[in-house]
Image (cartoon, rainbow, N blue to C red; front, side):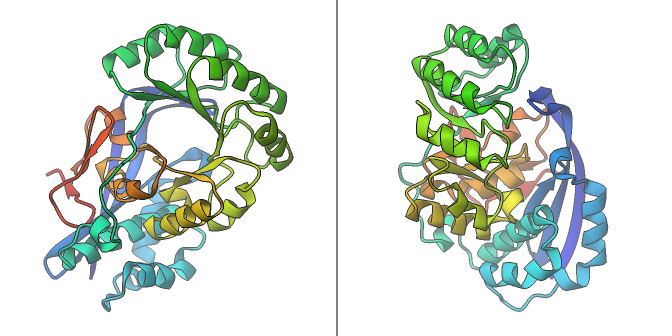
Length: 337
């Protein structure tokens, strides 16, 4: 098996602002694993909040390429377990490798990934389209630019209720709110009352990730479901979220890939938690991997490639919130030339 590394700077259509800051581009690394004339692809993007950079990714991949290039017909689950000791301190890279190997393995089996998992494409959730923090005029303009059935609205300002009130005047679509750790306990409970009146479906991660005591208070008093994001990073976090959140948003890069994400979803379901998978502004490489998990999900946030000026790959596409799968096997990805 051969490792091939591709690096990109993903330019965004618009500056993207959340409670922690603004970004105009997303550095991305694509891992390609090639064997017997077929290739699989996986992705990791750099994120300041998690102290990750493409330069560090590339350096580590080159250093450990001999470990990576071992191929012995292992299943994706076995390969992930094999890699874990070498990449336990870098879940983002582990994710890219897991996605790439899973894609390659299922292509070699002449299967689409959801077929390998024995899943059926029935009753799939629609994806939301994300509106970053901006002036009300610009947020409204972005909604008009991309009419969509579900919007995720980033908040974490002093004027959050006013923002949603104004946006509601321009759309009857479902609203989801993501405060990215930007609120306090009393503020969250109070906001939940007003946001419910404004047709909001749920609130994602209102409090700082480590405020478990506050999360319990919010969970017991909120008028809307609360979904964990920054509080649910890896597999062991799912059980912590029970009785502190109503659901969990699993991110492939944060947990180490498709293999642990699928286990996290299964665990969450067993605890009666709502299940969601989110993206971190990936290209169609990462987004296409997410798509194969949707038969297991209540909600999905996989609009990352839609936010880019130019995608670097073809794969799963989105049609007014609906997921259209690629005809290719594996995750269905093909890098643009």
